[in-house]
Each structure stands twice: as C-alpha cells, then as structure tokens.
Length: 199
Image (cartoon, rainbow, N blue to C red):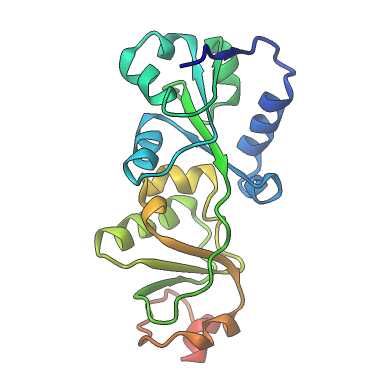
C-alpha cells in the first residue's frame, strides 16, 4: 500500500471543493462526484461491492487500525491534520474519514420495478428515511420529481444510512416521465399535488 498523500494547506483545491459541496446540497451535480463522510457510509459502500476513488482521513483516525483499513480500501488516500478535516466536515463530531467517488450515471427508469415516487418532498431527513424504508421493504427503485430534495446531498446520504447503494435512484423527473411505469400506483399525500390529481 502506497503512503498516503499529506495535505496541510487550507487552500488546497480539493479541500476548497469539498467545503463548497458541504455548503450546497446539490453541488454534487455540478462536481460530478459524491462525498461520503463517516465510518458507517464508507463501510456501507464497501459492503455493496463498490469502491471509492479516494479516501480522506484525519491523523487521529489514521492511528486507529479499523479506520486506517477503511481508508486503505481506496486506491488513493489523503491524510489531513484533524483541524483541516473538521473544516470540510458537516458533522458535529466528525469520525474524520470520508470517501470521494464519481456520481453514478443517471439510470433509465425500470417500468416494471416496485417503485417509490417522491413528489417535491423537501426535507432531507425525511427523504433519507424513505430511502432507508424502501430498501428495507425490498423496493428497488426511487424516482424523485423536480422540487424534491437532492437525493445524493450529504444530509440525505446520512439519513439514508447506506440505503442509496442498493437502490435504483432517478431524480429531476417531470410528472410525464412516470407515464411509462407499468406497476400500480398507490399514493399517499398531505396535499392535493399534481401526482394526486393525475391519478
């Protein structure tokens, strides 16, 4: 295993990019990459047979064998002083480990798949909980209409607790994109939105 690359400059372009992603929930779309922070999300990615492009880890975490092994699952490891890692973290008590990986390509809608449709649900915690529930019940596809919280945002990722990596996720859809679904639609709503009116 190659030695990790050490970054000590606060204005390093990688760290600047990650700070920007922490401030903007939809920044991953423009960047084309995802930031997974914390031991649980990193482990969940590996358990699904996926690999990150690189790992970032703080010095204190690097000293812990389990977290060091998690970082070394990536082909490239960046080692940061703890204070610098805290500067890119969105967590109140960072585990000081995270993965960067390319944003998955938007898949085509599977018309036959059991599906959850999110219609302008904007609370990131609720969206993540729904993804977790869908995965637990064996629903393999989640479709998000425009106006729904960004599915791969850091808050939704944390609330989803790894469910993302076992789901077929498509976001930014128009209502007409649902026309091809060949499964029955059952709707629950707290308001009379477009999806309810369509049915």
